[in-house]
Amino acid sequence: MRKQFRDTALELAAQDDDLVVILGDISHFLFLPFQERHPTRFFNMGICENTLVSVAAGLASQGFHPFVHTIGPFLTDRCFEQIKLDLCYNGFGANIVTTGASFDYAWDGATHHAYADLAMLRLLPGMEVTQPGSPRELDALIRSQYRNGRSTYFRLSDHAHGLDVPVEFGRGVVLKDHGAPLTVMTSGPILGNVMAACSDLPVNLVYFHTLKPMDHALVARFRHTKILVVQDAHGLAEAIAEVPELSMAVHGLPDRFLASYGTVKDLRQSIGLDPAGIREAVRMRLGRAVAAA
Amino acid sequence: MPTMTPACRDIRRSILRASKASGHGHIPTSFSVVEMLYAVYATMRHDPRRPDWPERDLFVLSKGHAALGLYAVLAHHGYFDVAELDTFGAFRSRLGCHPDRFKVPGAEVSTGSLGHGIGLAAGMALATQLRGSSRRVFTLVGDGEANEGTVWEALMVASHRRLAALTVLFDDNGSQVRSLQIPNLAERVAAFGCDVVEVDGHDVDALRAALATPAPTVRAVVAHTTKGWGCPTLADNMLEWHRKSPDDAQLARFLEELDAA
Image 1 (tube, rainbow over the protein chains, first blue to last red):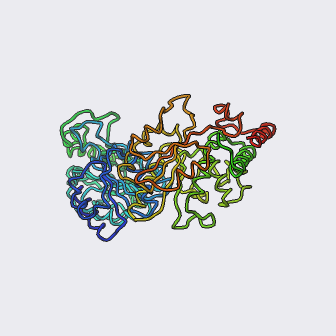
Image 2 (tube, chains in turn brown, yellow):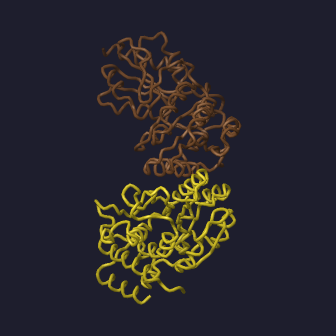
Image 3 (cartoon, chains in turn blue, green):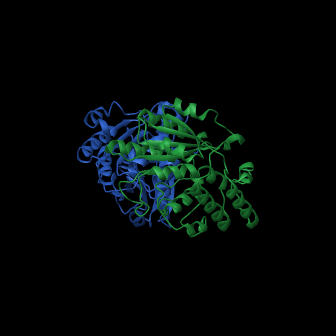
């Protein structure tokens, strides 16, 4: 997905002299082609994430369209106040692009994990929050949002779901509608595991690549069903819960740090977010939903 | 000891009256920056009748709690009527205890949380560099604010990028004697790659000379000031008066002290 970010930025920069890229000393090798093509608009600015965001706000105040990019927790958890005040409160629009979604950096341990970013940034007035699950989704979302004057969060993962899903900012997607009493709702790369888990189960499946603004109308369409949110980060369930009168449960993260190492697959399995764990959760909820119907 | 200019005395009178009328304070810190703000606005390319003039220079009050000082200087220049200062901090006022760029003509950035404005100003100066413009960007940072690590991050980035459009004024008013005073502030700022000038922060001529031309890299003006300068009662009791506003008798005494300064 990072390569797609580079390619999209490179293509857009050829048409937009105000597009600038600010890196926090990550992805600099990947961005060499951008640096060579647009040396004056490429800044590997240093490991000082708070300042990267403030500088981006200053650039945005003067009409530039900045992309700030580094590892998820450092650019969101650490920089929450810069995003809140320098971007959102001041109304200076910049693009926050992270890598290392949830526990992509599994073997780096919990210091490099980000579970709260989507939930926190959703709370900021004026902020747009996206969680693309594939390079195609990322490309479409960047193109539609990057220069609209608002600040947008693009949460990149190295583990794309590999599915071809329609993309329109702010709109959720119905992937399966069986008229079932249970609707599974999910977002981002974990869709791959959700699809594998539910492929032969009679459930409805709704997918979101945009968490703010949430597609309330689409959620409301499934209000008459039980809803199971499957998520590998906080934020989606809270966004869905903005729709009143839902009967909703969440299959997601435990209330503890994931202090193991290994791979994303290992960590997902350890907390029931592998296909088998998700399937078990869906089957249990489906049984209850059928009984209640 | 420099002599207070008539304009800066008038600005201080406005600050006192506004604080009395509104019941809100931050007088000592506003007093410490009056000459600096006056000198900045005397140096900047700006037009009070056109706050959005595209060719204007930019000023960011990084130490946003000196807003009353900024408002008094803006009013002095005609950005809005001096009488509006009396609304300071009121529910429907445009003039809050920290500046809001959507409300205050002449305020470029909404500030308040310390350590943010200087990074924004660095971004504005980078924009100037990218556009090949002659625009200058000024920002005013408090010495207490310099406890924030982001101040030093921003200085590192700005001096590394040789952002000659940027001038950073430090209000070295000794406010941090109570917690984390930064000794030798000018030396430390110089060590971060800035072109440093030290001045008496109440000497308008010295400030104007320091601000007149940009340096080849970030210009830092470390201005030694006194909180509450011009009113000995405020200067001698700066901690007590940090957020207080005067009653009628206190206002009369402060105005007398000011006339004698």
